[in-house]
Length: 364
Image 1 (cartoon, rainbow, N blue to C red):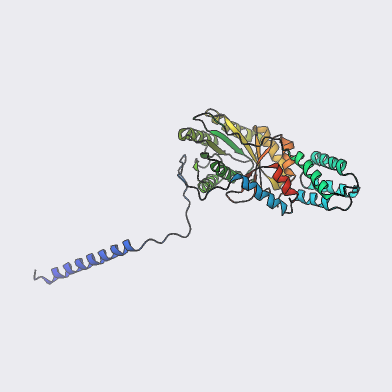
Image 2 (cartoon, helix red, strand yellow):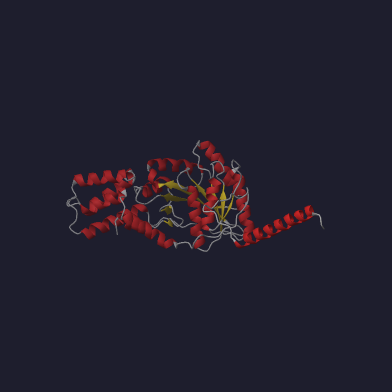
């Protein structure tokens, strides 16, 4: 051991060993710094992610109360027309003509506008009434009748044992369709139901990722497919998974391309057929942007001709909407508005309540 070279080698080895031990000890004591920006990960095609809700869902009853408050404080076209009529000193021919024009501009539609003006003129007369309370009540009653208080607005999600209630959500891209699916899942969770989402909009870039994100926020799982995959295949796989998991409801998001009526019919028709091999469709909900007015009605007509729509969802029905679209679209399609969107938040979707809606328009 008198070889100096050997001692030098041994010394180097020992020094390196000590440095290594000290470095490993420090690594164990100092935690890793988390990234400031979370990175969403896309599930594998056909996968179902395990998620937890971000918060407790708001009770559905309080959501429409929020819409009522927003309508009462907004510049909604229909609300403004009603307020102007109630504040008029004299209901002469010019006042009624201006009221009628404003109603038409608020997307109420020609038929409903004529009915409302005729009914109010019969009740209030040309000169109006000296009792503002009576005038407000007459306006409330006639408007409520137009909105349709007796229409069945419930979501019918009863289902046989072992088979989930399947809801197909359709509409043009950009109306808030995908976000509506996530928000609807949130409502159903608040009612104690178990839910599974299906991302059958496989043509729009990042649509599956968007739905998965909303599903994660709501606390439900999402079945996805590869981009450009057959939408019917994803829908089938989702319902199949829903049966295996024993969930109460399966919500299917679909593509919203208005390319041609024939193409849309073929695509949605195929989705509907493959779903019904496993379970009947409980609801077909058509999502419409309430701010689009007559364009929204035109879109609604196309979808109504393609699939049997059972209910309507009006998004952005707050201060930016004209209000009359509620009546117009129900008259056009003969089906009720069942849900309304109030904003961009997770709990900003509410069951539609005609009484609350009219009260909000009248500023009550």
